[in-house]
Image (cartoon, rainbow, N blue to C red; front, side):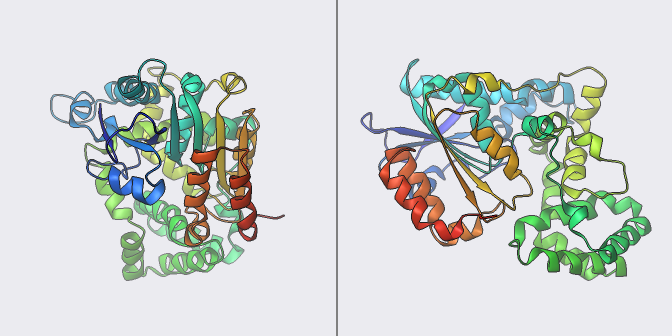
Length: 372
């Protein structure tokens, strides 16, 4: 495994691992110093692990003799158990068998942090997780995190049905465009942007559709999924999709861009699962109740990816947890603009969840809390 430090290692400083999963690429060679400066400052050793999904040697083991994906091999190489042990290998290599670390992750990387905690949490003193999705809780609580259809007006529903019926061969790309739109608009502006895009699709406005695919990086994602780097992403998407029970919500009248996009990306692995060739992913919640780890969970009330209700449930599994529920979405744009996210994570890592300093940061950010 390749890992990189943001600055020369100092044994007297606590160590933070930046954890990213297969569908995240912000942890790259040569970037850890800038990430340390932007996110954490100089009070810590900061380590970035470049995941096996971005490592050519691992990718080759997931391909057949012609360079095409061998999906069974891909599962064996890229399932999350392998990523968990990669993190622990780096921990032992850098800090020794009994070394303690702190973990940071967002979205899928946050889920991987919690997966690590469920396996090796005794080696973690503090963990900061932003938008920590958990498909196992989605299924257990019977949640539906895809509220797209219920949020549409009757007019927009009719227009979208018209657009999909007129171009069935483009359904996957159209829904991916609508799914990606969530990442690029704050909650207040999303409904209008969504209606405008649906109207353009129904009218056959090719220029507007092409602009949306470009602006929302849809075509770039399609190219990525067709590349060798897409193999590990498909495995990770299966780990999001299959345990969540989302397949039960597909196939009806309602259009669910989030869920259908997950299914489309994970389809090769779903087929293997349905054929009995790979297992259902698992998660040990019982281990979490026995941890001394301090865990910070940053949730967005309007997050379309990490359902806020599942984050509340996840927090309840930890004896020492701090939950911040922001009136924000998956991108946490309002928190970032106010500088709150960085202040939260720096203060939490430096002084802990029960500290007066963290309480003051959270109090000062009171205008950004979600209130019912």
